[in-house]
Amino acid sequence: MRITPRRSRAPGNLALLCYKQGKDRKAEIFFETLACDAERTLGPQHPHVATSLHNLALLYGNQGQYVKAEPLFQRALSIWEKAIGPEHPNVATCVKNYALLLGKMGRPNEAAVLDLALRQFRPKTPDYKSRDSVASRGRRQNREGRQD
Image (tube, rainbow, N blue to C red; front, top):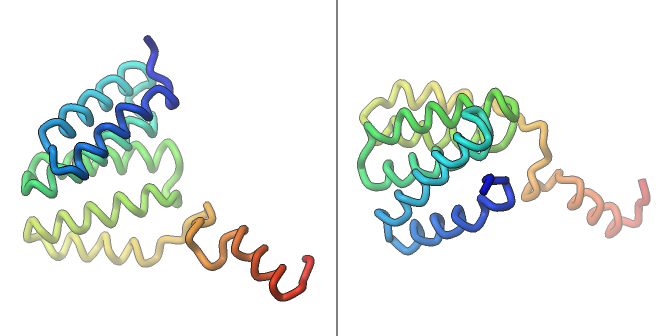
């Protein structure tokens, strides 16, 4: 059975559920399996591979397994930058989480460089939570009686 983005959601959701419930070993197995399956079926540079690697890196980072987490953050970041562009919100999230990891690893100078880059980040995709998102602009215009 070929793993498609739609089929990969259920195991991904199970992995996240295990992670949130503190079932780290089960979550780790799910994330590793998802990454391997996605890489095999979708290719090593597919964004779904990066998502699984990023989630696994978060898990390892929270467990204090920094040496295992760092290359996963680096690879996820590299995949996302190439596949969806350096100005995508997923890239910013990965940079933020990688910077936090570097801080925990006692490498504040490297973390500061990433943090500085993050402050200059300007996503091209409107953030759905942003006050300036398309939907919120429309609601504001309706409240203000404008029909731009």
